[in-house]
View (tube, rainbow, N blue to C red):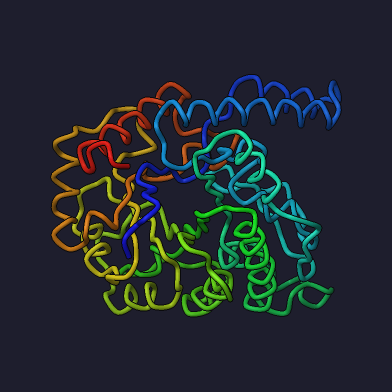
Length: 351
């Protein structure tokens, strides 16, 4: 699948929040400014981050998740039926639980995508948590008897309908690159699989597949999936095949920054008719990768996948949780500059 729109320089979606926005959030929480003032601060921050991406020659532009608490918030805060708890996990993600089947209260991210289109001619990209991921991490069987979803699969299917409707809305508004994030999937294709939350592997594939099917797909639309941040050391080949066959996305966003056999095996198994975005620089460490080392990995991958069907990106988001950025803003900028430099090595100036 030749990537005719040449979205070569990509990033996962979340970017480090600027100090001004962090301060505005703190002031809003303290009652010093109202919601309108906070929204003005969010708009200003998004305008600035778009300008930064434009200067970095990115071939897609996102809002950096700046208006959101974390990468899941568009869904968790945009639909009814979820309750925030006081618990957090080791990554700083707040635990939410599903108390009833969700219903959308309006567009999830389409309004922000429209603002991106007004700010720059660069193609807007939108990221959303996958419905299977949200269902797997929010289903609580103890709530089933008091009006909660009867099963994680039922919850996932309800979420899939909401996400699928949002994707259709985004496409009608001109968005051509949409990425779903399900960080649980790669762990489940390992030779010794880790848990996938409340959903089985097969149910997770079925739920996410429901979300990405469109009755009509305009020319150039790409729907992608990021299945995890790190490739397992050893893979179950049959499950990798299930993964790729089970979710009919156009682009797979795969980790490719460690140089492991698992990373290469994931790429080798990718069907010929799918695009791939390779996460070639580590978003968790400030040290810059050696260009020759990265290019050797890309060249090795190009033996199995046409480089014209590739894009490159950092390995993951830089701040999937707003309060816990992985790097500083300056370290993030250097990583994005490196991705742009690597793109020139791969494709010259033809992004």
